Amino acid sequence: MSVATALQRPGGAPGAAAGRPAPPGGAGSGHRRLIVPGVLYLLVFFVLPVGVLLATSFYARVPGGELGEFEPALRWQNYPEALAQFWPQLLRSFGFAAAATVAALLVGYPMAYVIAVRARGRPALQGLLVVLVVAPFFTSFILRTIAWKQILSDDGRVVGALRWLHVLPPDGRLSATSAAVVVGLTYSFLPFMVLPLFASLERLDPRLLEAGADLYATPLTTFRRVTLPLSAPGVVAGTLLTFIPAVGDYVNSSLLGNNTTTVMIGQVVDARFFRVLDYPTAAALSVVLMVSILVLVTAYVRRAGTEELV
Amino acid sequence: MTRLRLGGAVVPVFASLGFVFLLVPIAYTVLFSFNDAGKTNLVWRGFTLDAWRNPCGAPRVCAALVGSLQVGLVSTLVATALGALLAVGLARARFRGRGAVNLLVFLPMATPEVVLGAALLTQFLSLRLPLGFGTVVVAHVMFCLSFVVVAVKARVATLDPALEQAAADLYATPWQAFWKVTFPLLLPGIGAAALLAFSLSFDDFIVTNFTSGGFTTFPKFVYVSATRGIPPQANVISSAMFVLALLVVVVVHVVSRARRPR
Picture 1: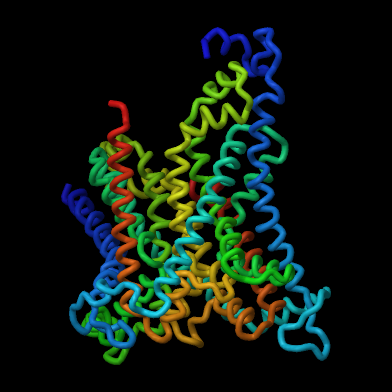
Picture 2: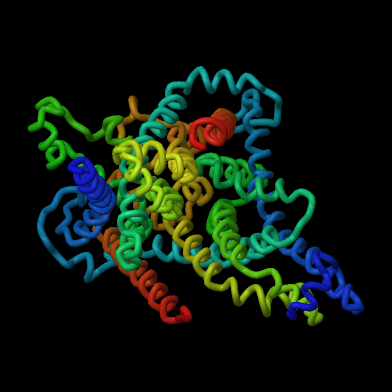
């Protein structure tokens, strides 16, 4: 394309200015057609299923019917009944996910900082460290979770060391505890924390850090007043990418936890569907989970966007 | 100055601990593929190459692997095709409802897997669709699609729209412009998105568990056998996949470096 044709039609219809017939439809409508298959797919296999889930959450048991037999109804009582029975598991899921997100931020921030700032200008090292961050994705998620079961076992070295340091009492254990589940959740979603943090820290201008030091700021002050605020978008993205999957996860809680004090909401939904065949309760809990996450995420993004982090 | 130097050492030390935290479970997975496993393969009992010599030795482990590979390949193909088209359309076309489409792409990523799985299951149940390979593929395409869109959109943003306008000026139809100009330039981004989709599909457990019925994938096999004891063959397969994935990353890196103009 020559400069002349570009100048002839600033934003106008392609080809029209040059006195030629415009190509049929123009580029814009052609592009619009590209989205149709994907949008249809998401409508049929995401929006519609969520609608069916919502409808199912109001279904009622067929009177005198067999186990797992339900009929369309508007039984709103499914919600208060499900919440009355399963609020501890719901609250616990949010608690565990929040703890894991904070832990992942504390562990992941130095990692992202080293990759983005300390390894700057050494592309080979940077590349290697990024590969190490995504390396867990190359092995089975479930086998890695089983590995934590082994690492945190009662006769393992970690528990032995913690007992020796008197962090754990002599008969203290980690396996089948809340701590093990939170460690597992932190581990599972740590790469999702590190990658967005890395992406935002990579854009950080090192001269700003030098300027902080020149103005007699301690490294800690420079970090708090310069680095942290500038990496805020990465913190927001990383915490969301860690928190959302962690709330719904039940691989960690079922493999690393126990059957009473560590049960998370995902396990309940799974069991209601497949063991008890109580679809309306499972659907109601899923809807509550989805809505509360969307509300929390919206509130968090608003708050992070306006007051604290900018 | 001492404070600066102290901080200079503390951060890398913490970061190294983070990397150790990240990598130790992988080391365990690989190590226990060499274990002379008893029933459970949870305790180290001695080195052996038995499982590596006979990776399909445990019942159904290779069938599960083949199931995962089939689901992964088909879902990746479909999700990448739909997602790449959607990404180009979203990045280039101006139309009403663009915000709504962006939201539609974003929402599946902001929804926990257990909700996605539950929603699809209720839909399949209400349609009386038998659960199996087909329903798993439908589900995987759905959750991979958004990630493909995000990955390809980032690549489209780096393209010069003038190239497509030039094609339009030369009487290329929008489809011709897409296939002859946009698509070849997007190919590296589309390839990366496809790899991402495959790894998401291959390692998925929760959505698969809800939508698979009697069909078994590799993660489902491992999860189900966890109660009775995971055969070391599962560790062998996972370790081999790990090495393979690392090789792919290295090859892609080397090729992209060689192609980059200097």
